[in-house]
Image (cartoon, rainbow, N blue to C red; front, side, top):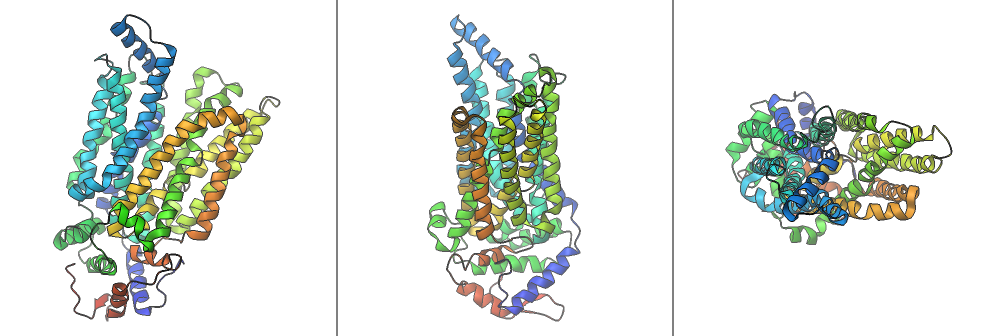
Length: 526
């Protein structure tokens, strides 16, 4: 499954030649800028919002109570403040779901880069609402702000991986794609650092924690307009071959991009429908059934593997270990640091090891450390040093997650589908992601109440089942073209190669310089 199209030697030679030439190409400043600033104004904001509400939680609840007294002349009921706080936290996922559902419609009009730029508007509006809510004496502004920043995150987690996957040469597509995961982790860590009492985690400064949301958005607005749009989008959807050629030239740092243009033309000719497919068309097409199932399972495991639930236990375990309550925020910085380092390490090795081994290793290691954590939690009260082992297990779970499952599902969503199906695929993947996120937040407190320290065994089952599925179904996608990857699923989908692709492969041969040459009079203007 990992080496498609070996029956066609002419096409295989083209791939080999492309691979050798690609390996000699340096990574350009343009490509790195697109990856870093694209992720800074997208993934970083998502990660930051995962952690930023933890430090000021007590201050925000006190603000709700103060506002309630000023409005109604009486203290807020305990049940009401709990409800308002729950809405403030959980509405982020509802906004994320709405953002994911809207992606396909927005990129149809604005493209990948245009959608990322528009999304900064949501981030700035949300920052203003969240930062000025206290001044305006309106807790509703905080709730609406959290909803809007959720919309921003839902759009970002779909559009950014799509953009990065389409602008990057196949031999570094995984490494560049991991900028998404690295900046998410860096966002979480930044939220933890800025939330420290010496910085913004004070009653007089907590609103500035939300003001900071505008900084990465503004930085992206200053840089992204000067970077090219996705060349695949320009060529296949806008029919702008000149614009696609210029974009490829800037991203790849070379003048001759005929090979890259031909690869995109080949994908266009191989598709039955080059026009953008709807979600319904994607669901009904048997040629992509297993790609779709794989993405849905991988994205569900991404949220249901238990990482979000681990935060419920961290502070409690540290208290049991005998750490003073006032130093716990500093110790928990290690979780954000481990996340970031593991994500960076994954980005450095992903093109050597591959997506599939990292995913399977990550989920399997999480299952092992969740099992050990369950054992350690059950002996925590009887052995004085056991809480330290529990905390080590927590760090190991986090590192295992970020080594593969933390970022690769987004990369795979862009890799497993050809151009016409990609927006609909990200829309479905995003929906599964945010619904699973919401389900964990809603159900885990009840699971924990019923199962106590055995609650993590639920996640052990999820991780094991996810690893088994990926081992038997997922092909390796590193250094493969999008068309190669689609062909890897042809056998399991029980379909044969499209007639157009067969015609293309038979019509291609290497010229004397080793470059791909079209020997028929096929239209290359797509």
